[in-house]
Length: 294
Image (cartoon, rainbow, N blue to C red; front, side, top):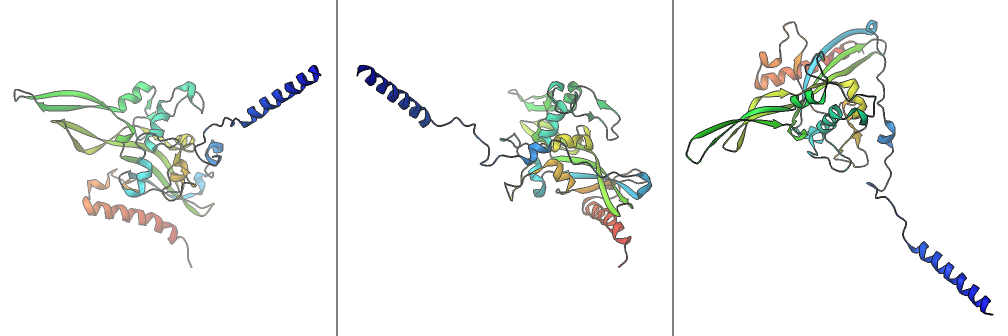
């Protein structure tokens, strides 16, 4: 009988242990959303552009644009100033891409290539070269305890939050094979404003300063893996590549290819410059309409 009771209590002990283990909650990794995000992580690479041939291009025009992040329609490109969960600003994505160590780059052995000029002729070969473009010296003037004005030269290192504009250079063209007016962005450049310090207050200069230029078709590999905030629907965030491909941004033209290679600001200012920008935009759109008869 003792053996039977011993076996009985042993079975109860094992069953109780099994029940106690089943009561413990399973360890689950915290999820960012109730649903798993699969669209953006599984894309990896951007959708390629349709192929084009020089023989099929019957008209083309190169255009220089400004995307002002202070405009309400473009604020989703500016914020957040610091990364929030899985969301980064456009400037943060580009800054990280041009300075990422080669061992961590998801696309080959090099980081995203940056250039010092809009013609994309001079490459910034090292992270040190890029950091020089992302810093500037300014004069700091203050009055000391004796009433004397003291001026010092200091260095300021830019952050993604200092970028308030982007320059983009794009080519508009009409492809007769597809019977379509199309556009390709060639390059993109983050822009900031320098400043001087006077008694602890920043005084910004009126002329914007360019940082570096990036060949946009190469940048698409990074932009397609970063999502932009959608203020109307949290379930439909688009990637930055989608934003540019679908033209979901506000901008104005500040230069168009011309014989004198001059900008609009060289012959128009204020409201006249804005109207000239709109005239050029309408001229490009009207070209396609003039090709058809109804």
